[in-house]
Length: 129
Image (cartoon, rainbow, N blue to C red; front, side, top):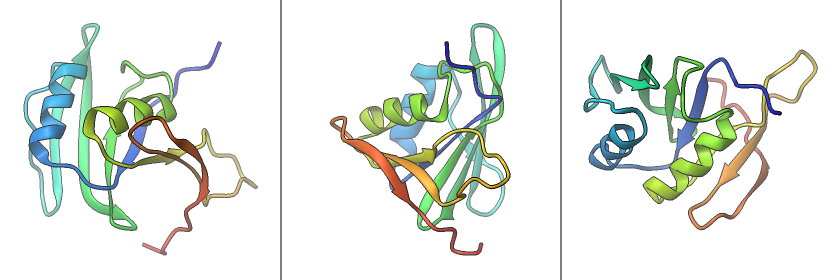
């Protein structure tokens, strides 16, 4: 059985706040995201009685927004599980890490998911942010 990740982070190509709020409400019983600084929004959802802090950062990496769930109590075991559901629910390209990172791993290797189920490994170099 796959081990549950300590937190979940995915990167969204484009998405409206309305669509994202609707998805977060259905997945985590989360109230709408609220502004939390320049280009950032936060909310707190729940999953099986546990609090799930959520942070959205606009244009976090290569024009993609970062969506971070700061909890291991989510509906998804891995970033990839979340990315697959988000791509369908939000009808946008989603990227995520391939898994836990260890020294010596290539930091530019990511997983890319498109609506409709097309997915695969890609190189996504860090722009030096």
